[in-house]
Image (cartoon, rainbow, N blue to C red; front, side, top):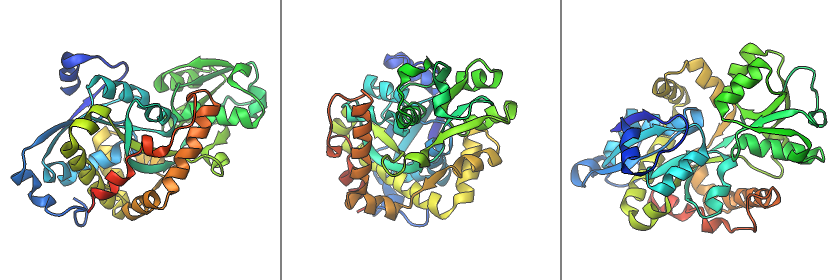
Length: 339
């Protein structure tokens, strides 16, 4: 069971804000899940998300397939525009769990939350420019919009570095994603670090929009995983809540991998979007099976992704020193939730 709400911009604090926010796969991954709701006390959960395929699909599936109820959960799902806002809400207690893209991984790495589950490998980020700008080097001195602390920020930084440049070489304009869509569409900025499906909206107005860089340009050194996060207090004080949420997510991961078209349809319905738009969004990302996620966690591959991202965040000034993945990714807990 869930309640679906929207938080478009800033995060309010305290109990009043928390009230204001409110208004199954083939086989379960844990024994007795079908009886959990009947035998155990129902636990209330606030779970933030971003209304795109990566950020929504598992929540939409869990709601439609009854996985929340299977695991004795009543879930409220406020919508956010980016990951850093959700990390802020985790810190104030307005959220228990949330979804973040790779650009926000530095926040759990800095101790503000913990990653409890990997999700997908993102391939939707781009550095784009107005027609007539054909290289990263040509961005020198031009206005470049970016949502700070996001994967758009991350890919812009990587692209500039590869060209021997930094953000000091451009006129950086921090903006929310929706504002960037409007600014690119109207020609108010020269370029941006952003992602699909937002860029699909821009291309309706600027069909000749130039893509200067994308995730795959950097895949040899930096992965772009997306993930689910939990507040530090929740992890420390409410282990039963964390375990049940992980079990529901694992069930939804099985369903999503085995039923990709239905996953797209459920995501579209959840967010009131056209299925073809969600399908286009999904095509820019790699969905991993539950078995892959377990294996990649256990064999150290996820740690290698996180080490590469930590190196990037240290180089870009987001982190002052390297951090071991075990300090902010609870991978063993994720795997154990399936036992």
